[in-house]
Amino acid sequence: MQVTRSQISLFLCLLSCASSLGTRYTPDWASLDSRPLPEWYDEVKFGIFVHWGVFSVPAFGSEWFWWYWKGAQSPSYIQFMTKNYPPGFSYTDFAPEFHAQFFDPDEWADVFEASGAKYVVLTNKHHEGFTNWGSPYSWNWNSVDNGPHRDLVADLGAAIRKRSLHYGLYNSLYEWFNPIYLSDKRSGFKTQDYVEKKAMPELYELVNRYKPDLIWSDGDWEAPDTYWNSTGFLAWLYNDSPVKDVVVTNDRWGLGCYCKHGGYYNCADKFTPGELPNHKWEKCQSVDTISWGYRRNMKLSEVMDLPSIIKDMVYVVALGGNYLLNVGPTSDGMIAPVFEERLRGIGAWLKVNGEAIYATKPWRVQAENATVPVWYTSKSSTVYAIFTSNPMQNSFKLLTPKTSYNTVVNISIHHYLEKKKVFLFW
Image 1 (cartoon, helix red, strand yellow):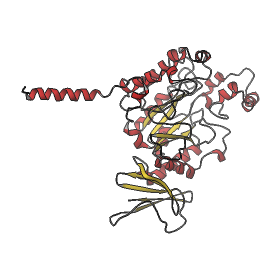
Image 2 (cartoon, one colour; image 1 turned 120 degrees about the vertical axis):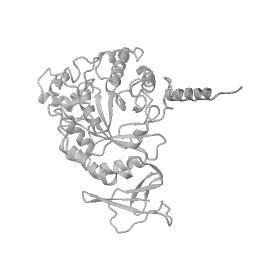
Image 3 (cartoon, one colour; image 1 turned 180 degrees about the vertical axis):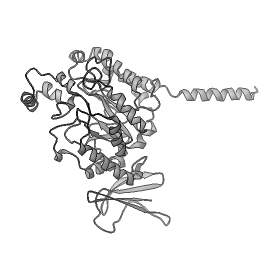
Image 4 (cartoon, one colour; image 1 turned 120 degrees about the horizontal axis):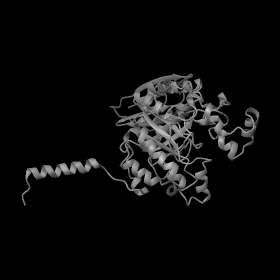
């Protein structure tokens, strides 16, 4: 049988059209876990996490204030309320005080951009259930109907994207005191009224409305993924959503999913592996080591200093991870000066040394304790040796790299807080 040129052209066109449709993922983990992680995420390396909500009003203890007060009934939280608020004051009474009157999204975005971060993740909704946008599924318990009376998710998103940064949204699946959720919980999660009426409709609406580049899921651990309908949502997200080609997700989609299913792995808050993981991962870390939300009772000794942050980030990147560093703004919309100082300090360091961080890969050896401790990253044929302490000497020896006559060594020195940062690349 003879095949004409027109038939060949038609066949090639059909192949091209089929290819453009892309892979269709089915709502099961074997299929969903096979999806390649969008490349942008591995390249950016460093992001900013922002915990902001009604918990920023009492600003005491942690962002879990409501739970520690009414759920765990912690004596320190009860005492705080007794001393500072009248009898009968409820947690929902804090919401009107969430004014955000000084919130300037462009100022925030300027600070985040100056930090060298390439993506920003904002809490759309924490475990308290209050949404930072006008969710139609959270009537009067959202930032448009109550408190700031503005769409905080949209306002910050616009400012972030003007600076060509990626914008992600944190979303808690469960809500501590939502009566529908508690009813499902009492049934042993045999009913799914909360998922069908609240959690999933709200999440679909969030994606369609704001088109986030990243979804940082949380609050999943009390129930299995089958209760949350996680695989059905992720199949839609990867196949048909407006962000299907760029969106990145984490691993918090139900009891037992951590470090096992999803896009990249968080595994646990402040996850610190001892060796190179075999899957893309992220460490989330807070500048305030006690809380993710802003605390009025925060002490300077509880705040990470700049050298500690730099060392932590270098370790994470050398082991193939991303570093998501958290700051908690005040209820009136300010980023505390100590947080801003840390972020701008990171940015100054990255301006000099960012080549050894952004778009790098783990080298065959990630670290060595030679004359001084050193971490390695790589990019194509270039290897970067990163020193996170002052060598305190004029010469030192690297044991792992094997040089040749054609090897070129460059040295970059950056001072911060009396410390040296030395990079060698070849």
